[in-house]
Image (cartoon, rainbow, N blue to C red; front, side, top):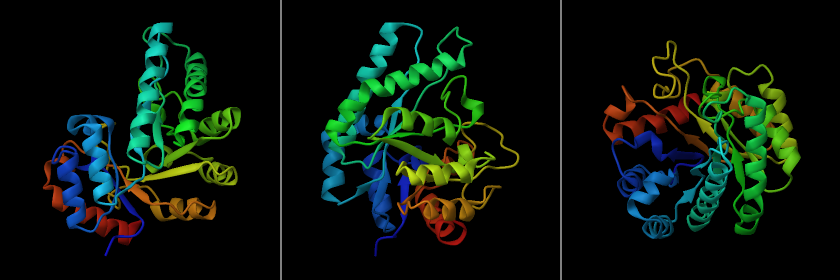
Length: 274
């Protein structure tokens, strides 16, 4: 029987498996929903990745990732827009629920975060017609402020939802607990997102204390300080009952363990602490 409500972001087992192997390992444990990364898709080829999804009747809760819009030159910004249009096409080929956007940080040499955020809104506006025509919703994923300089200058749900309100249909948010759990406005903004129909994805892991690497030391659910059940309850209260997608980057722990152990632990923790 398929495990209802659970998706595995394939970053969680990226050191153990390629996409084909990861799908096989997931299916052995009755996991039938995944979220691949573009590099994993490119490694085996888009047509093969799409075949794997179709043949195994997989649900793709998202494709990671588009974004990275700010750039120091017009040419750089245009290149990002072109790449995001390709990402939309890839998401459509995989029948993904959304394309996740990690929007990008400050351009090289810049200290103007407000301008970077303007470039993000402009970049999303430029690709939104293509996304609408392809039937692929765009999910802005606000990242923790520690990433504001290099990965994402959109750092709260409030900021992401302001962009959604500005640009209209076809855009929403991916709520990753790792990035937003600390926000004093979190539950208020979850309710706002739900009222606007903007919740497109719900990513789970945990925040370890101490965290030894701000990028590659995410915790397994239950090993840290995030109130996962409360956040889930607030997201469901807001009207989103989609799958919870486990996304763990863990260079010194979970990426070193056998993939089947990682997946079985994800299942156990999903059932008990999420």
